[in-house]
Length: 266
Image (cartoon, rainbow, N blue to C red):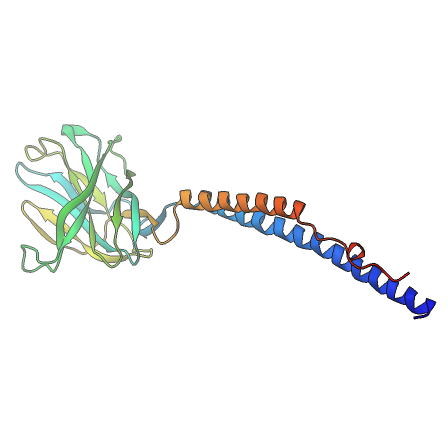
């Protein structure tokens, strides 16, 4: 091998050595960036998980009442209910209704309750009606002006896909059957949202009957088809741990240069 050939081979070794040395730094950089991005994504996603409106008939039609709630004469007790069917599994978070005339007079105490469905109701003219109570809560009155009232169910009830549920509004005061103390559940608009609207019914004395106008209400829930916020945070922590391990491994596992393995011919 002549002198020119030796110089040419050494030049090739130098170029190859430089390329191999540069590659690990590039890989190291990517190995740090990817876990960091994944960790940031999961931690941010965990903060973004929140309830969504699965059905709503808001805004309410001002001045138009769908249901009288309470007692309009001794013993003549009335309530109202609306049915909905989620299309996927949810955890219930809250329910809101638009009421008017709810000022607390005569001991008024409005309750919002979620009921299961009774597919064979006592009234043979009805195909469905509220069955058993699943969750309930009360709302404090205001000055009687038309307003939205919300019960926070705090995730205490899971809603199953393709299952009918009822939102029932009634007066739960101890003496609600004794004297006039009613208020109104206002009329809503066309139902929107992922859940199907299955109609509304009025309860009078001891039975349900159909009601044509949907009252103003909304149901909020969290989909159980996505990880809970705690699971996102756990995945984020795992991503950060992966980043730290990657940096540690790269710092102690740098490959040797070719000039330490192959000696050019002198």
